[in-house]
Structure formats: structure tokens, C-alpha cells
Amino acid sequence: MNTAAKSETGQEVVAANATPLPPAPLSESAAIISMIERMAGDATIDIARLEKILELRERVETRNAQIAFAAAVANAKAEIKPITRNATGHNAKKYADFSAIAREVDPILSRHGLSYRFRSKQAEKITVTCILSHCDGHSEETELSASADVTGNKNAIQAIGSTLTYLQRYSLVLSLGLASSEDDDGRAAGSGETITDEQAIALGDLMESVGANPALFLKYYAIESVNDLPLSKLAAATAKLESKRAK
Image 1: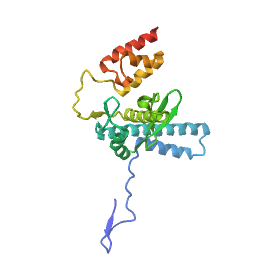
Image 2 (image 1 turned 90 degrees about the vertical axis):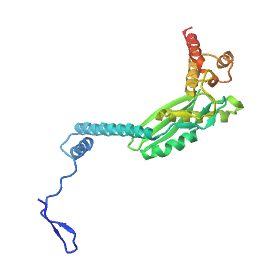
Image 3 (image 1 turned 60 degrees about the horizontal axis):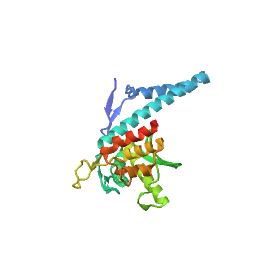
Image 4 (image 1 turned 45 degrees about the vertical axis):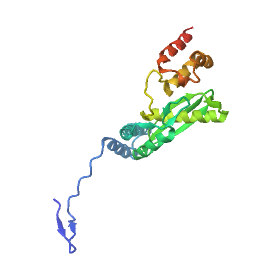
């Protein structure tokens, strides 16, 4: 049993024969890692067995990192509010630009050990990959591709830059599963509602896969860009393109 006495200064002094407190119990994963480290230091263990031990440790660490990542994303999303659409596109559609998204999500992601970065490449299309990472080591990637945005008399560099910004914004939104709320600008949603940017990307990919002529598509629907397609016509347009694939 622990015994203690008071020193001249009034401080409590534990006797030399006091029983030490038991160590705090280890978590399951910490216990496994501790066991692996002890076994790895045993010279009698053969190399093949040691390799299996190290593989087990790697699997445990990978699983723990995945769990920590999922928990961090869930906790961060619980704090992120719907992001106000603060900008207006070429077709008068409101959207949240990248700076508005970053202002809302960056401090929250940082508090939960999360960060993001982008990787890009250009071939027939421009491709951007958003890499969402957690401080424990796990990361996940979301990839989007689109053609250079040549609308609005942009030069070649401006067209590429516009698409890069667009893909960065949407790959981050998809990575986090974000929602957005539209500003009340007096326009009620109705028959004039156009397709979303995600639907426009999917429709552009479909046109390319079936060999459709984008210019003829725009002319047929009397629109300046795919984004201007009325939502009410999306199903019919998709069916028409799919029928071209069948031929």
C-alpha cells in the first residue's frame, strides 16, 4: 500500500516502498504495434516471420489512418455551413467561386488535420485531381476532366486557366461532399432552370464518347454553351445522344 508523509515544506512525499500505479491500458492497435516491436527485436525470429510481422504492422497503421481520415472528414463536414453562391456566371447562374469555398473550409479542415492540394495534366482534355489528405497519412483523390473553356473570346492561356479553376473548385466540392445555397436574387426556380455544371460536364463527356458534334448540339437546342441547356430538356438530350451510340 502506498504511504506518504509531509515534508517540512508541506509537500507530500511518497515513501520509497510505495507501490507504483499501473500503466494506462494500451489501445488495441497500440498493443499490437508494441508486440510487433518486441518481436522484431528478438534475434531468434527468422526473416520470413519478421516480414509477416512488419506487414501486419503496416496493415494496422493503414487501417488506423483510414479510420482517422473518415472521422476527420465527418467532423469537418459537420462544421462546414452551406456556401453562399457569391459570383455570377456567363449565363446569369449564381455559383460559389473558389475563394468563397476556401474561406469557409480551410480553417475547419486545418483544425481537423485535413489539407488539400491539386495535381493537373493536359492531353486531349485538362484533368485536375484534388488530393484530400489527413495528418495521419491517409489521402483520397477526386479526378475531373474537361475541355478548355473557349467561351467569351478567351485566348488559349485564358481558356486553360478558366478550366483549371473550374475543375479545382468542383473536385474540392466533390471531395468534401459540400452543399451550396443560392443567394436570393429575386429569381425563382422554374421552367427556366438550366442544368448544373456537373451535368454539363457529364453531357460533354457523353457527346465525346458517342462522337457527337458539339456545335450541332448547341445549334439544335439554340444555346450558346452546354451549361445553358434547360434542365427540362436534359433527359431528352441524353436519350438522343445515347441513340447515336446505338447506331
